[in-house]
Image (tube, rainbow, N blue to C red):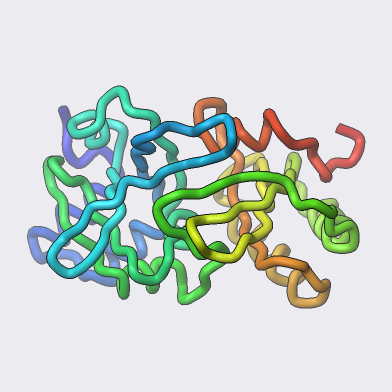
Length: 233
């Protein structure tokens, strides 16, 4: 089994060797995919449990830097794959990241480092369990404004809406966006921020990227919601 298997793991190895900085590692964690075990799987009711580890200085979420590293510790478990920036946006402020526990090279990222990964901006406050559902009333003005913004972005193939609630935290709207290429994420996130700055939303708004079949969040949105963009889907 080869290590490093990707850019993130190369930076992780360089950090351990002292040839990369902590800032470079946080940037790599932000921009690259992480494999996150889901100990209870994705339940039909929309529950998703995150793998919380308790270390001496606080709680951490276990994540892995590649399918190979995930397989070393959690082969066969349900999991989701998402960029570090999206995961960080889901985590409550006291949670750190335990990178590659039991893997080739692992280390903890404290909660302050996770805050740097998310850029100081939390889209959804999260704890150990997320419940997905639908808002009682659709925010029609917000969805119309988002659809208008997405219409001028060729990168956006479709967008769906859900309501996410994590632990005892207040609920937040989840805007699930399917893209032509994930390099286009930044412009989509910027468009959502611009819309939510001028259109009132009943809840905080989070943006997540819809992924191929097998990702629990994407599977739930696909099975339980209809796209609001494009409207003729």
